[in-house]
Image (cartoon, rainbow, N blue to C red):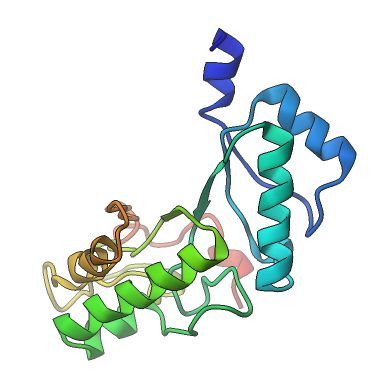
Length: 186
């Protein structure tokens, strides 16, 4: 591989819509994009999404790594083809470890069927007193416990379904009085 190809292989890109235009395909080829992070704007249906991935792989000349931030609750990028699970804080507070693990297995199976390789979840941020209430629905770790094993159980579910473990951890989040986007949430 050339230096440009090696650098490009580390790039995870987003797309503006649900279709891969010839112009965007050419751009992906030119930068040697190695990965794709989808958002709701990229999804109409499972079939459309798999076709989008197929076109991306064709344009790049290899399978791109597909990574998604699919945490449940308000952070779900796909409108169909996946189970609508609650946010991680609710899951961590209300489900037992075996249920959380099974949820992780289900999410892994559903995301794999869509063509996703890595889920940037579960979110296991640590919230403390005075945290931004707008961020309180994301993490599995609540104020009332120093750490619940829920995040690790969800990861165990993904591992049981054949995935490598990924955790979405921002320990500073819980210490923020307000996040950058707090003023946008209403």
